[in-house]
Image (cartoon, rainbow, N blue to C red; front, top):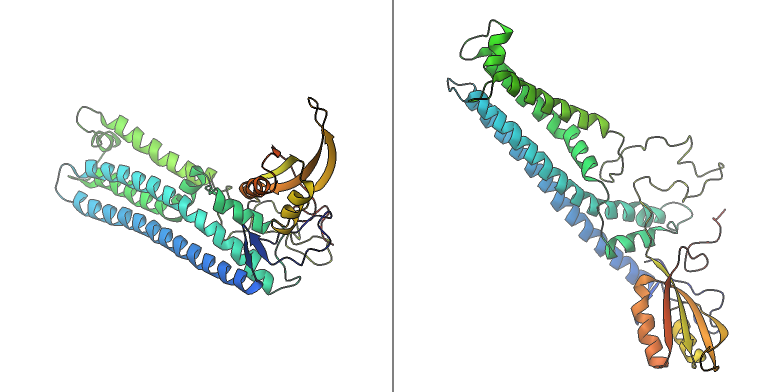
Length: 354
C-alpha cells in the first residue's frame, strides 16, 4: 500500500521507485489512486450489505413481538406463555444480530481507515497519510479479524435497539398476568398466574426477572467497550488536547483515530548464504526495492568462504524473495527469522516527524 523504500544500502544507480511495486507490477500515482477508489467502493458496498442485514434482524424482533402481544391480550389461556416464547426469540435474534454486527464492523473498519488516512490526508496538511495506515490495511486484507468482541457487539446492539424490545415484552408479560382473565387482587394471585404446567409461578417469575436483570446488566457493563468503528463516539479517557496537532507537539500519529487498531504485517529478517552476492543483491535492490547488507562468512564444515546477505522484509514478500534467489543462485541457502520490530526506511521510522 504505502511505497516501499530501499534502505541506505540501496544501489546508487536505481531509479526513483513508483508508488507501488509487487512481483513485476509497477503502479503510477494515478493508477494507485484508481485502485484505492475501487477498493473503497467495494468495502462500502460490503459494509452496506451487512448493515441492511442488521436492520432485517431488528425487524424480525419487532414484528414477532407485535404479533405475540396482539395474540397474548386475548382470552387465550396461553397468552403469557406465548410472551415468554417471544422473549426467547428476541434473545436469539439479538445473538444473530451481534454476529452480523461483528462482520459489519470488519468492513466498516477498513472504510473508516481509508476515509481518515487516505482521502482526508489529501485535504489537510501535511497531505500525507499516517506511516502505519498502509500496513494496517494490508494486514486486515491479508488476515481479516473481527475488530470487536462478541460481548461488545451484544451490548451495543442491545443498547441501540433490543433494550426497548425487552422492556416492551417484559411490561406486556406483567400486564397480561395482572389483567387476565380478571384483574389480580393479591400478589399471591398475580405470581400464581405465571405458572407453566408443573412449574410453579414463583419459579417462572424468578427466571424472568433474572433474565431481564441480566439483559440490563449486559447493557450497562459493556458501555465502556468502544472499539467499534461504525459508531462514531469519542473515546473514554482521552487526555486533553488529544486531537490537537498544533503547538502541542503531538503528531498525526499521536492523535490517530481511536478506532484504528494498529496492525502490521509480520516483519522478517532473512539471511541469504550465496556465492553470487552481487547478482542476488541486484535482484533485491532493483526488483523488490529493498536494501541488503553483505557480510563475509565461512562454512564451519568445509572452511569455504561465502557471502551472507541480510535483508529485512515483511512476510508477504518472502515468496518473491525465494523466487529471485532461486533464479540467481540455485545453491543458495536462505534462513527466515521473525523480527520483533524493524526501524528505518521502508519500515517504521526511527523517530517521529516533527
